[in-house]
Amino acid sequence: MPSDEFESTTENELLRDEIRARIEREGRITFRDFMALALYHPQHGYYNSPRDKLGRSGDYLTSPEVHPLFGAMIARQLAEMWTLMGRPPRFQALEIGAGSGVLCRDILIAASRQSPEFVDALDYRLSDISSDLAARQKRALAELGDLANKVAWNEPDDLTADSIEGCILSNELVDSFPVHRVVVQDGRLREIYVVWRDGGFAEEVDEPSTPELIDYFDALGVHPGEGCRAEVNLEAPRWLRRVARALRKGFVLTFDYGYQASDLYASWRRDGTLLCFYRHAAGDDPYRRLGRQDMTAHVDFTTLMRVGSTEGLNILGLTTQERFLAALGIGEALVGSASRGGVDLEEHYARRRAVSELMDPAGLGRVKVLIHAKGVEPCALTGLSDAPPFNA
Image (cartoon, rainbow, N blue to C red):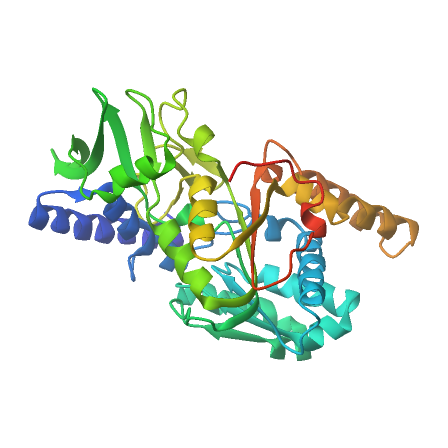
C-alpha cells in the first residue's frame, strides 16, 4: 500500500473513532454535525488534510484549475466594478475559500495586462480555514514577483462590519457548508440523525433538532414532497449576513452549483442533491472514506437572494457561468489569441478545450453566478448582460 494511502486510512480510522465517541456521548448527532466533522475536523477533516484535493490530480475540478482564461474573465468583471465605483484609489477584493490560490494568481496576471491602473488600486485578500490550503496558495502566488505584494491573508472569521469597499467573491464555497438532511413523512418535516449501530454508522429519523428547519421552508413557501429527502444549509444565510455587514460599498460575486428553491425542493427530486467526490468519481455514501472524500449539496439561491435583500444588498442578477463568461467575451478572447498569433497551436487548442469545459451546460457551465451590490448607483454589469429573468 502506498504511504499516502496508508496515512489516509489511518486518518480515516482516527476520525471515525472521534465521531463514534461523540455519538456515544450524545446518543446521536445531526447529519449536519457529522458532515462538519468529516470535512472540517481540525486534524483529520477533509479540508484540513494534506492530500491533493483540487485539480486534475485531486478529487474534483473547479473552474480556476481548468485554465487561466477563467481568472482573466473575472479580472474584467472586477475592473468594471472598480470603474462603476468611480475608480477609487483602493479597491478591496476578498476571496473567501480561496482554494489553491490559482484564481487570485490568474486575476492579478490578467489585470496587470488589461488595466495597470486597476492593479495599482487593487488590494487582494485571501481567506481560508485550512492552513494546508493557505500554504498552497502562497506557493501558487510565489511566481508573481512584485505582484505578490498585492496579496494578503485574512483570518477565516475576519468579516468586520463595514470593512470592505470593493468585491467579496467566492467560488464553490457555499455548497461545501455542512447541511441538515430532512425527509417528509406523513406530511411532516423530519430530520435525519447519525447513530452508531452494529459496528458502523447508521441513520434514524426523528423530530427536527431546531425549529429553524421548519421556519426555513415556511419562509420559502416551498416544501419537499412526501417521501422526499432534502438538504437545508442553515450556514449559507448566516454567512451571507456576515458578508453583507462586512461590505460597506461594492459587490458580492458568488459562483456555486445550485437552483432556485422551486427547483431544488421540487417534488420529483426524491433524494436531494448531496454528493461525495473522490478522485473525480461521484458517490452518494457520506459514511465512506471519512476525511478522504469531499461532500457537497446544491445551494438554495432563493434564500441567498431573500436574505441578501433583508441585509441591504441589491440583487443585480442571477445567471449561469456559461452566459456570464460568454457575456464577458471569453469567446472573443479565444479568437483574438489565435488571430494575433500570440500563442502556439498547442496552446490555442488547449484554450479551446478549456473554453468548452468552462461553458459546458452539463458541467461547469451550469454553475450559477449571483451578483449583489451595496452602496453603488444602479448599474448594468457586462457579465449579466445576457442573464435570464429571475424571480427573487
